[in-house]
Length: 348
Image 1: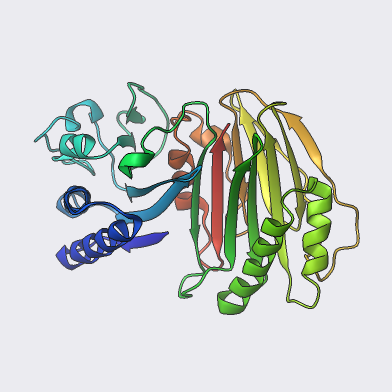
Image 2: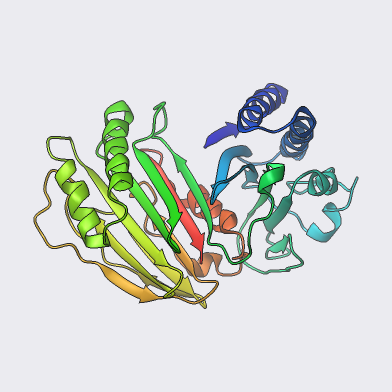
């Protein structure tokens, strides 16, 4: 994930060049890169033109079951858009936080959604014909583009969004995430190497490699195997969720303070974590919990770089079909500046 603060025209150029370069690496054509650059320019220009508060562009490479693409998010904490239905039209501008050119973005990208909360409209969302109400301030625009061979994302697949960044000032992240689907199961994991910077990143990579080597095991055996392989390291914490799509259940187990919540019908259930540190101070039995799930249920996992003070009630009226909206808002509002921070949202 790369975050660009957008204050002036120089910031626009920096974001546009970086995203164009990364899009080329992924495999987009020169024509598609030109379209992506137009989108970046439009989103950035709106942030500057409408004097957004803490305006940012966030770029992510995205992957879903081997399908590759990019995600570009524009966010701010400004007064919001009063009439979101109008600004999606080509050429329409507004003195809220976003405006003209948004209709063009919708044409150039594979998906485009806006969620805006103002003191006047109490929050509106456009993307797939939904109109929502909520409380708060700010605007988030989320757009995605897939490689042409990757566009057919099945409606029944687990949809996942991750927001992750290192401790501010560090070049590498001590938090890592792991997503794997095989045999009708999906494995989701967050790893937090102790400390920050290069050494934390190294130990997190080791834990991730051990997870990959042992992912065929039961969840309890998997956690024990990773712990054994982490001996003589500075240690890490991990949370693993295994979704069994055939049985429609998921299991969760952790060593350390990686949290998981399951949300369905606006009810928020928090799962219990197991105290300890991989390879260092883990002496208790692993507590593996199992829960059935319903279609449309939401799993939220986060490291301790995300404050646990967030409540789903604050976000209950945002769109749930796209996990990127919820992951971005939790990250924006609750990521700590003094730690690596990661949040993963899955719609199952």
